[in-house]
Length: 444
Ligand code: SAM
Image (cartoon, rainbow, N blue to C red):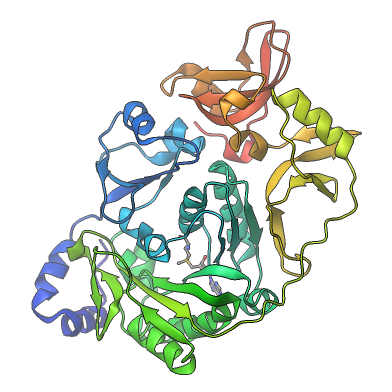
């Protein structure tokens, strides 16, 4: 690991006192590797059988597992491409465990890219409720969208909007809001050299100032009695306890609640907040759970879908792809067809780049299906499926973008699955499957 900045060492010695040597010793060892099961697409048993390396349950979330340090990189594992799991160090799942989302709720993840926490929330919602994943940096919002698609999430809105604008328009709309704030990333020093290199006391202070601004905006989006969780992956008091205290001073209508979890340890002078140090078996994390006690008028007006169009073409596609075509409300916008999640507010002016499930795009009167449609489906729903074992030559060839040989009786669109989990699709004719795995995702 990169040498720790002397000023950082000094601050950590002051913070941890007798525990400082144990901290340094942990920091000299690599951090834990982990994955998080996507319960919408796979089971623990399937991962255990298919991955070929042991999974050790973690205290930080029911779906998180520690994996051996020599396990293959996720990008080389076909089940990763199928969205059966998300690569995530287990303690990074702690903030969502503290958020405790419930199916049916409306949840805002305000600083969401690349999507570790959004995909975790989506797995818990299980398609029931609304997830709004926002990322202010447009390029990072695209990565967020790609991860949500890979994990087969159907009930999410993805936007790239400034928190102030988004939360003002959607004031009082959400049951729970997560602010996983941009921070100085001291807790990532073991895995990210650039975090060590860009660290300075000034950076810590400027992060703290920005965090308070984001929290102020986020507070507006929470409904009366709703929950706001603030989390970081850093150790500094300025960015953790002090940010929460500054927020509470300005917002006496919010109260700090017990975190409801046993892992980690209490915050400094803020016992209801939770800290995780490397000595607690994680990287470095902080989370505080706040509740709005005051009324908050919801100003969001309901979504007004664009005039119906493309319905016939959409129906034809669904009949071609599915054994029993789902009866969903379909919306057409800019030549693209979507199934919007229930309970949407008006979206205009909020930088929305995805609304629910993208079915496909209209091209010359017919609909070209989307990759997302197949990733969100289950093999048993489709008319045609080619299912390959994860160690097969065919699945690697498919993820590489090659054509596959098929039974000559297969015609039309077919899902391609690995160990029973859909990872893409192609079009069959004359004993061949023409590959539709997106070019930007191809591997090997
Ligand atoms: N929650 C994400 C996950 O689990 O994958 C990680 C979020 S990361 C810690 C913080 C995010 O906040 C970054 O993607 C960053 O681009 C974004 N960000 C940066 N400045 C911001 C701002 N002023 N307001 C909101 N988000 C910001």
